[in-house]
Amino acid sequence: MSTNEVMARLQAAVSALGDVDVSAWPEDTLKEQLGELSAALVSLDSMLTRVADEVRSRGLRIEEPVSA
Image (cartoon, rainbow, N blue to C red; front, side, top):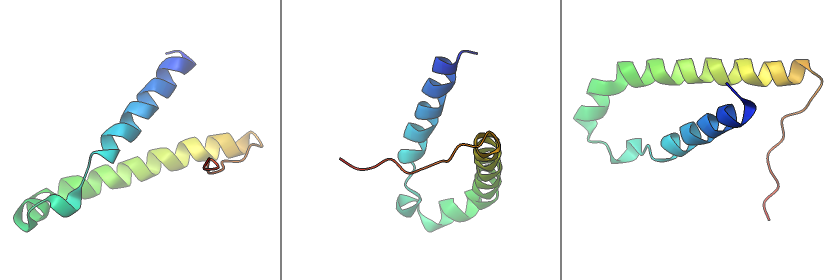
């Protein structure tokens, strides 16, 4: 997969996560989905940490973009 394809997929994932509004979910729905949601969040955290660690291992820093 090309670098451009990877970046496009990462941006799509960010966009998809931006659409998640757990505060709008009914309490029963949240309770029903909590196990699956927790597993997804833990997996996501693990993957993000891996990618960040790989960037840092090459001597680069991850910085927040400066707002215009």
